[in-house]
Image (tube, rainbow, N blue to C red; front, side, top):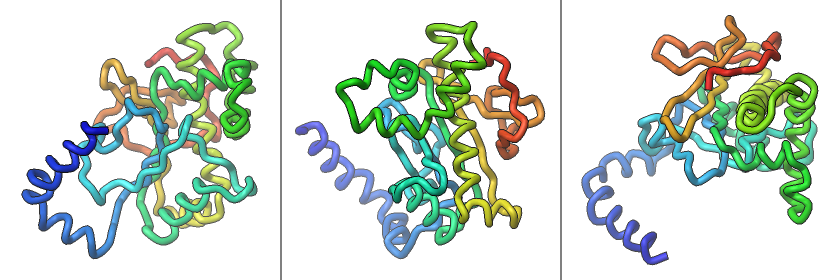
Length: 224
């Protein structure tokens, strides 16, 4: 706790003072371009990863970067997405999974959440991911299986986003992009889903097209 208090004092004395104009501007309102949906994992830092500043990302975090589909019981994820899309009018939504994801590992091993009823219920929203992996990746195990599940889960959550009325309306209008990313913690690489190749590839400045799972490949993914 003391480390956090020292961090606050450092922020107030050094960071805030040098960026006072920016924070005064932010106090008048926010205009983020992107809704960034990612895992609660402490090893994932969206602003550090993307080189963005306060006010540039609207961030939604939870265990497993899960987006309950439209019609699920009222939840904070639905409210956050709706606000980002309908009020803030973000231009892009990124669903970003990451390597070594504990939530997805628990999804693959239901016994690990036997004493965690809330987590077990939450992971039900990723049941489609588990079934896809069980049926289509039976030849994988260990880390390759987890990697496939992490990637498939990103694509499943993008499909869930499409079921939300606010998102569907913006997609129909053609002014909202959906993107699937996976961050590899140990190398710093970020892999983006390419709709033409139906595969994840290392992200480059040229690879920024929207993600779609309408006809994605279900072959084992080895790019990460």
